[in-house]
Length: 348
Length: 247
Ligand SMILES: Nc1ncnc2c1ncn2[C@@H]1O[C@H](COP(=O)(O)OP(=O)(O)O)[C@@H](O)[C@H]1O
Ligand SMILES: [Mg+2]
Image 1 (cartoon, rainbow over the protein chains, first blue to last red):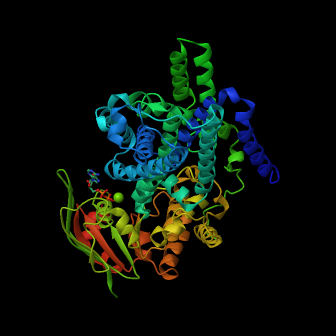
Image 2: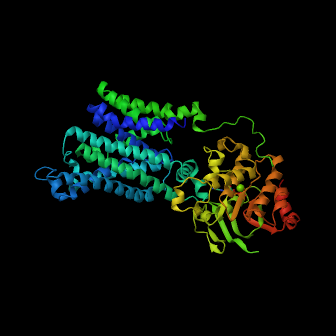
Image 3: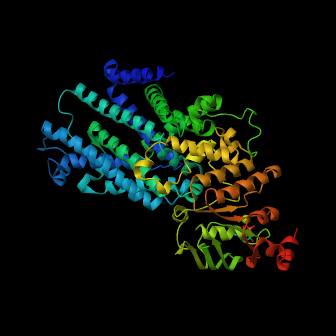
């Protein structure tokens, strides 16, 4: 196993690299699959590992879009004038302006969302269970409404951004690799984070927050930090989507609570909550299911999707990895009492 | 000896039920203090007040001469005063070693250390303390699968892992197999003498507490009925009537 593991990861990286060249026609779908993986992995940080089910992570996606777009525009033009003209007319971006705008836009989107998570978190992390879920959803819905009525940021029309300067196919690969790079970075980061004391602390909060408090763990700090890290990555992913989509609206694409906002939760449930690989596997499975039903079940795709969600929630709550863990607990390092330790507890 | 906990005139009621009425007591640093009383006499309520689990209606609670009655559970825990629960609380999905590691004194960790892995020293301490309470053989089992008594032992070991100055134990022998109780008494005493932890113990079993404590307080109907050495308590007619007589 020891020698196989690096080989497995090297093979995986190679696959990630060649995919857009093997399937050049599917560049956009592949990028969308990465987006699904990213929002699922980051949702699981709070939902699976910490026990706080957020229905509002889409807020960071939408906010990331806006912040990235506004910083991008603001670096080269007057934002109000730009949105007034819906991005049309004389607003040009040089290559240098485009790439530096994308770079700083993404960074700003991540940072802004991380700070938002801390501020919102301080207000609503006192809520537990379903109240937290509804509280976060309310934030996302309110933000969508607020932004649609704010003309300076484009109002209900949203914002139009320039297309990638250069070859269209190169542009597709550019975004694929940015999404893939972000996804791989998050995966490596989480793989490490979950082995640290930090990972153990958020698991403790999930298992028994009152006990964690009684043991002096800085529960609020861990909750805020976890959500801020999660929001940072989602914000960047939102920003990337803004540049990839070219045009986005506040309710349909940015704060899309009932689409991506719910899909990310379904991905995690499907693959297995609170595991490293579960969200990744779930996101890939969900994305394939969605693409196939959209292509072949025209008119019925939402019914099929709804059916999948119901089946997952009712029969498959622990997801694919949860099911495997039940079958093969030893693969996950869980040991079962074999009766040879009867005398535990006696004085020695 | 100096007083490490000082409770003065503390009252607490739940709706119409007066659970604690004008309670005053003190816990000596380095000693073992007992708290006894019939079921429902307000012992757990007093513990909850001391560790900041709920606001009190009146009175003062001092820890190392500082008022703590307005502080929150975590803040008080970080001062080095820990409690175990009558209904035992452990992280049931984790195995015993994981339960121990998460109980490291987080108040002593820097930010960097929070983002680090546990050290070899941490693992050794966890193993050592699990051995101390007799759970070494079970260390890799899911803690939720242990018996109630074993979970109590684990919770005790977790508390020790946290390196507290004072440990408040709520009925540590309840649910423990009677043949193991002597061993547990021995370990509690060693926690006091070897690790220097001040103990404040709620105990239902008279034999156990008489054997350990240097000072005992007795509650009845939410009020302080008597206090003194084990001998004095044993011979106090009020205690005999209210507590021993009830059994
Ligand atoms: N959370 C609560 N809500 C309402 N009443 C409570 C609560 N906790 C305890 N009580 C009441 O307060 C009294 C003291 O309870 P408790 O402190 O648990 O006693 P003890 O630990 O000595 O058995 C009892 O009458 C009990 O019913
Ligand atoms: Mg009690």
